[in-house]
Length: 214
Image (cartoon, rainbow, N blue to C red; front, side, top):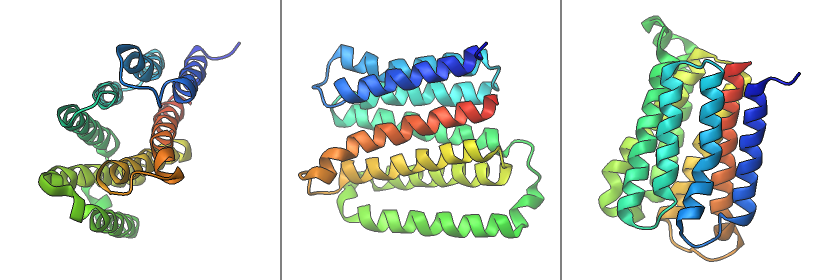
């Protein structure tokens, strides 16, 4: 008999695809917002049923809140969504780093990971910097939170499935930042960005939950 937790993850994935195909490109509405957060609600239920730690549950809830705010237009909603996801990254960081000895920070793996993530942050910020304006400090803080989450996950070694989920989560954030702040909002690539952001983000969250419940 299939595991109910994994059935819920599969159901959440189908709900996410439904939203992607039929609603992602639609105008803002209450129904569109609900259909965006609905897959995360199912994923949250799967995490609870799977007995995942409270910190993971909290991180997923914060991501759900971020999804809700980002489903609506306006700078205020974007800022609230950004704040929710920043907190989610930090909570994930605390979860992955809990139990790790401080001595891990001096390992070659830690140094190499820190170097790669620092180079990634600098590259992304260099691209975004001319367009950030008053959002510069917020974006820097967000970038640091992303890097901290990826760094702590890499050191914690929660398994390849979870690590792949973290990588997809990070990539979705980078694409979202480029879609939000950079110019040239026309063309096939630009039109595809919201779809790429959502699919990568939700796939990442699903893999994190799946990996932690196996």
